[in-house]
Image (cartoon, rainbow, N blue to C red):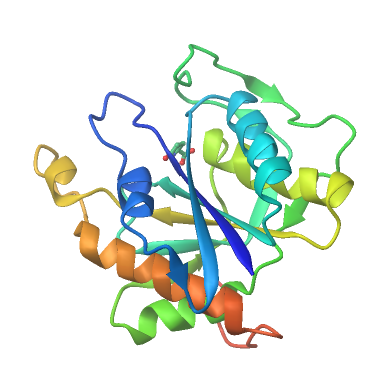
Length: 213
Ligand code: PCA
């Protein structure tokens, strides 16, 4: 199995993005799967183009993208991407899209097709906070969650894709008030655990991971 794992460049005034820092530290093989790492720009469309080129080049079985979700306290395994761009801040090339569909011809939403519950369970089993998330926001991370899933649904049937959001690093949280963070080593361990679940799970677990609000 070949797994393409992507991380984003810094955005929003931050000097680092933990997603690409953690992706860079992943081993070259996890659970027997080959891990291919890719940095993508925090820019709408361009992020998807670069992933599309990597899919052509590497023919991965799974595309797992990772992004920073400053303010969240654990690793969130995203369940769904929605067909809208509504950027609260401009992306790294100054695009601030408001209420536009990502793919006008696409459905309103896609569920990811990796086993989200099993991924959360594996991360928790390592003693690292994790949960299912039912929104990847409406910025570039949702754009990638939805966009890659659409690409797979329309062009690469049989492939799978998913998305993990990770918190700030301690050095990012240090300048902010009451801001949760996670050390880089735990992020790497958590992403690794999630990949083990992707490789080994045939059918996702049925266990509570929902939210009341
Ligand atoms: N996080 C942003 C985009 C890039 C990233 O790492 C987001 O959550 O949309």
